[in-house]
Length: 124
Image: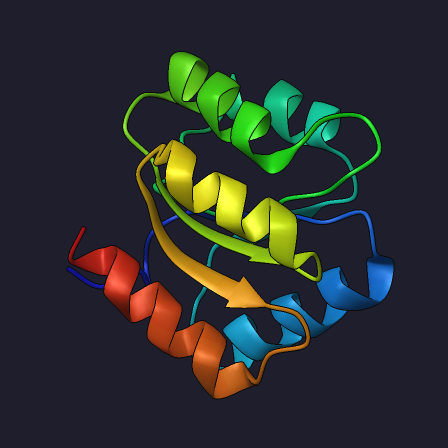
């Protein structure tokens, strides 16, 4: 499976991360990428559209990434997830919790690392 024609949602409270990820994905040929600066904005949109992949930050002010993923799956059904964080402790806790996260990226990460994580999520 390829994510190129699939809907991808990206959530991070850092506008520079959102812009960089969106630019990278579009330059790599991903045609349906929507970015959100807050978990609540993503959840409002997921009720209308059904993404197959979430790329999300684990630590955001309104809601953590694991809670966001759980709620997104309740609303939108099966969704793969690539999780990113600058916080090692939260990454370790998310791995222990499972939640079907297919890849973990420690910030800062390279564009190649993100593209590899997306490829890994396609086989999940």
